[in-house]
Length: 243
Image 1 (cartoon, rainbow, N blue to C red):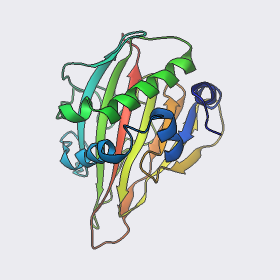
Image 2: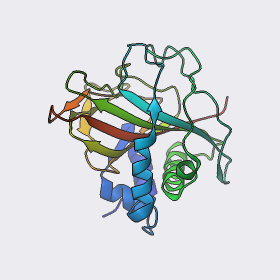
Image 3: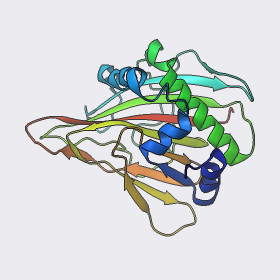
């Protein structure tokens, strides 16, 4: 049986996060089947081939490409794209690359305004508002990430290690994996012993989490076939309450 919005929100409240397999993500976020499949999804996924290098990597790595966009959501209203602006994280949340304004190339208009992105934004908003019990004028940031892996250099999806992003909620959706091993997601919830782990393997495998309680990280990736490069593509949506 497909979980409802209330079921997913309840799991986040209880456990701090919820992991959805691709089929469930597609049914929940795209009930009419018009956005997260067929030509719209193909074009959306292919846009990860047109990202730009992240030049802010303090570890000297050149394995991460990305694009960035911001959105504003008024309570009960639309989700509208905002002006392009820098991404900022405090050092306490990103001790490797935080503490400065980082300007990334913007998400292309046809991608940022397209049906797949808007459907994921709207669905995540519904779940997160059901989880916290209030409609919020969210500040949303969207990040397209490609982590590359080569025979002579592993790719690090979270080079800062296990972390929190300093926001209220986070969605991570796998767009695709090509010729890579690793990339295991680790979850540690405040007040609980141990860690959970799972791997986003299929396009649209998704995790939604309460960033105020949940530490999260992803293990490095390396090529399965060392004769070919590999990559891991994800979309990250962060939802923050305005300050």
